Image 1 (tube, rainbow, N blue to C red):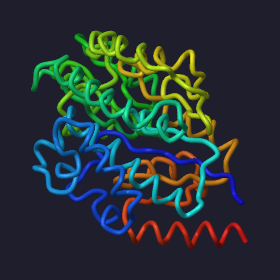
Image 2 (image 1 turned 120 degrees about the horizontal axis):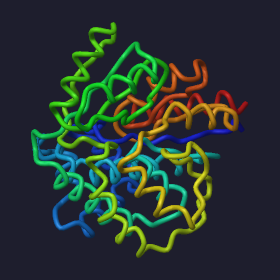
Image 3 (image 1 turned 180 degrees about the horizontal axis):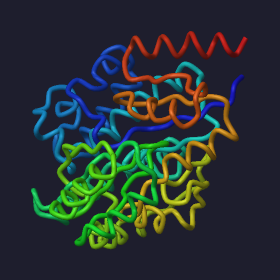
Length: 309
């Protein structure tokens, strides 16, 4: 059997109807959505399946919706006998990975990410923050431009070779974008409601810490790779790492390189294929695929069976 890593998407991967096809066809997936509806003060399943899209795209609602959908997909994949040797998630997806590894339960994680989303949404007034993708420039150059731009603008994500994300005050991000274009970079403003992984999230992070500290973090099996360190979690550091994660850059490229030394293939579990695209650029030839609906599930089953022979 090949060694597999499961990776879970973060905010931005959400879309209307996500998870619905699997929930209709697999009781394991339906059970996760039903549990979410019982825990949450609003029907998570209805939001995922029917929207409205404006609400689904808002940070405080997108995060629990993505957690729920990804875990519903995971239950279906596990039912097929496909199990990971390592797990990781991009930003919000790291919480999904921690549930997948048994570090915390879904019943604990769903209220936690609802609180995380709420605190992030409240941290910066709408329209005052921004994030932008930066393509074709090296880290040191982008970091220098962020310092030069003035105000608060930080590198938020190191996604893959030649792709970074900056985040911070809208004016500072805009100035940095202009400077980066002058240096030959391709820059695109992202459609997000909060400036994640920037210093503007520091207060939200420490408010979240009181919720994180109340949980009993179990040893993760399989191991979870941290966005902050690009190394395995340990239970005693879980709360501190998730606090740091909110205002620190996501070390996604480093995480995938570290995992690629320990696994043969990666499977993206949950909505979208964003992580698959990044992994193909980080470690070409190592991705196996993604699962988000019936078609992609059946494809993964066939491919895992083929390479296991």
